[in-house]
Image (tube, protein in one colour):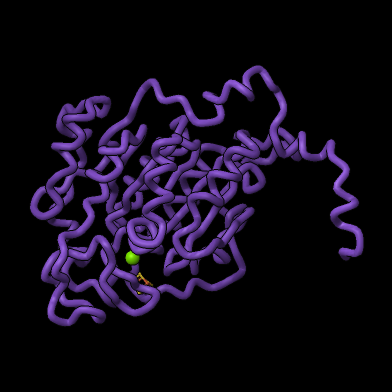
Length: 296
Ligand code: SF4
Ligand code: MG
């Protein structure tokens, strides 16, 4: 697809290139996730100026300056409200946000709960490597019970948060699970998530070779399967809960649940009904010079 506003040029992977070198550890799942995201954006014909890529703090966030386009690197656990504000201000943007399991189910779990309820039109790529990798392997809310980590050498004593059970119980309109070693699968799911009108939660089972020795790349490779190969109906929420439950032996990936009748937050707001402009256009009508006097 070509860009409709600035040229007729076809979007390519080069449009999302960055001159900055990637700094992730060798073998990290982040490499594949970033490649798949770029591929998905290009496949959908989304140009860099039509996308807003938002990043939380963490190893995933360290990729924020290693990809082209408009990007926002927020505070720890706070990427969801940032992305939600952007999505509400301009519905024409494709808003993607990335965060780790620590930020998502620790510092930012409150934001996740309410973003799911609101059904903001955002694609959320949750890097679930079951630890705080950036700060050197502390246990997170998704670390498995009894697993020793740097902050808990005798093992974690609490049960982990089950990512899919959590979002499905809140009524999420789109939930998927993918494996960071499956770039083609991630590409497909990221495209479906970006096309979905509403909050699209994509849990990436991400390997972290430096600190997560419990579920390495090979461990997932031997256990994941795609629900689409089993005549699965992703519109059945009860079936989705059952399919997503196993995270130990036979692990479901693909679109776990999708509400075919999803209506995103800004399309439900009666105040905005029949208004053709975006908030980003309307704010330009206000004279704010009195507030900026003296500012350079
Ligand atoms: Fe990747 Fe883990 Fe290294 Fe972070 S610490 S870059 S998640 S391998
Ligand atoms: Mg993590």
